[in-house]
Structure formats: structure tokens, C-alpha cells
Image (cartoon, rainbow, N blue to C red; front, side, top):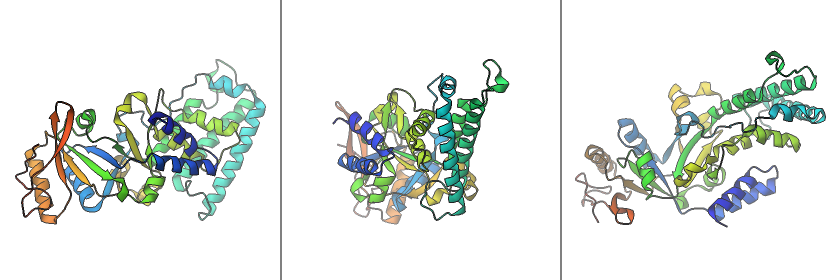
Length: 365
């Protein structure tokens, strides 16, 4: 099974409504678990240096918000069908069944809010309320369409259009935090795009040092597709199959967050996705303004190797070396060099007194 095929099968199993298939998704992912993953980072400012040192000291990973990702449509639902109105108006029986399902779902949500100890860990706080509100709007629209009061060409009678529902689903991604990795350390395009034209670093992570629950539940391969995901259709498919469960929102978010357009496939990306980590309480009033806008840190793993870009500023190298000497940090440090066959890594020289690398750093083949 090639890379594209197993990732396609994995996502299908992961988003299944059947527990045994979701278990098979975890098994399939373990079969294709990479030994190492790599993260490229720019290293031009004091803040970026502080982030790197938080990695090195504590193994704390910086997770970004959706809004700060490179592609404005990354992890967003894009409505791909232009005929939703006809689709929704063609079968009143279907709409009646959908309305009943949504009512049952909203009842479960209400009970969950009353009893936080229930077995629905994904939907809590504002996230639960916002998704319930989105479904309530969809239900109102379905009831309005079912009443037969809709007339083509009269905007005041068109109810809540499907793009508004899609917008509300996308608003829920403010609860998502993401960190991205690549399977490759010697990806020239990644060094150029994410390590600021080779002036930053590439951090290696040995996955044998990663806790199993992180790999099983939060680290996922990206599935590359020809068009952006449509979460509205995803939810409609669940309605058609009578599968609107409390996990639907979680699955709809993963459906968007774990798929990227094919032009990004050069990244060979794996992605850490957190929806309800305690650090990111879904009630955003518990977060600082910077964490809402920029993300924050969660526990991950310390890097097993640091690979410097060949254009890194000498001042940044010296600052890293100084911190490394002071704190007795023992992580191998390399620097990239260009060869006839592409990027290679070469170890950096050390002094006898340094466990990190010497402040007069030199890296050569």
C-alpha cells in the first residue's frame, strides 16, 4: 500500500461511526509510524529564540491557531456544491427525519451540559453551545423549507442559506490548535519556506520517546486531496445515514484539519491537533489574549537533534551556545550543507567544556 492509499484508508477509518473501524485506524497508523519527525522554524527574533529554548528545556510544543497558518483556507470547510437548495428542497420526508435527528442531538447536548460527567468528552462549554446553535439554525432552515413558503427570486424568503451554516461550522475552528511536522529533514523547500530561507532550524523528534497517548490520539498524517474539504456535505452524509452523534463535530473538525490541497503535498506533513487540551479550555475567557490569537504551549517531547540552517545569523548561534553551556543541555547539533545531491547535515564542533556546542561554532564535512 503506497503512502496516498494508506492515508486515504486511515482517514476513512478514523472518521467512521463504528468503534472497531476507529480502532483499526489506530492500528494502521502504528504500522506506518515514522521513526522521526521534523519541524522547521524561523529563528530571527527574541520571541522565536524563546520558543526554541522552551522546546529544548521542557519539551513544550508551540501550537498555532488556524488563523495563523500559511493557507487562509487550511482547516476550513469550503462548500463545493452549488445546488444545496435543490438538494434540500427535493425531499420533505428526508428533511423531517433530519429535523428529528437534530432534535435528539440537541436534547443530548442539553443533558450533557447539565451533567458534565457524561460520556461525551468532546462537546463541552462554548464549543458545545456553538455547534448546537449552528445545528439549531440548520433545523430552522429545514423547517422553513419544509413549510413550502420559499419562493425562488425572493431573497427575504430563502431562509438561512447553506453558506451561512458553513460559516458557523468554520467559526468553530477557533477551538483548534495545530503544530506541523514533516517526515523529511533535508527538504530544501521546507527550509526555505518555514525556516526563513535557511536561517532558522529544523528540530528532529524521535517518536520512540513520544508518549503513546499523544501518538494515538493527537498526531495524524495529512491526507492530500484535489479540492478543499466540505464539512457541510460531511454533516449531511451523517444525517442521511442517521449518524448524527455527539462526536460529529469532532469528526467534522478532523475532516477539515487533516486534509490539505494537493499542492502542499511536498511537505509530507504530520500534524498535532488538539481540540480540548486542558491548556486550551474551550471557554476562551480562560485564555490570555495572546493564546487566543497566537496559540500556546503544550507538553510534547524534547528534540533529539537540532539542525541549523546554513544561513543562520552568528548572533543567534552564539546565543544558543551560551544558553546551552549555562544549562548543560546535551542535544546533538548539526548544520546543513549543500552537496551535489542536495542537503546534507554535518555535526557541529564542540569544546571539551561544552555539552551543547561551542560558542565559536563551526560545522563542516
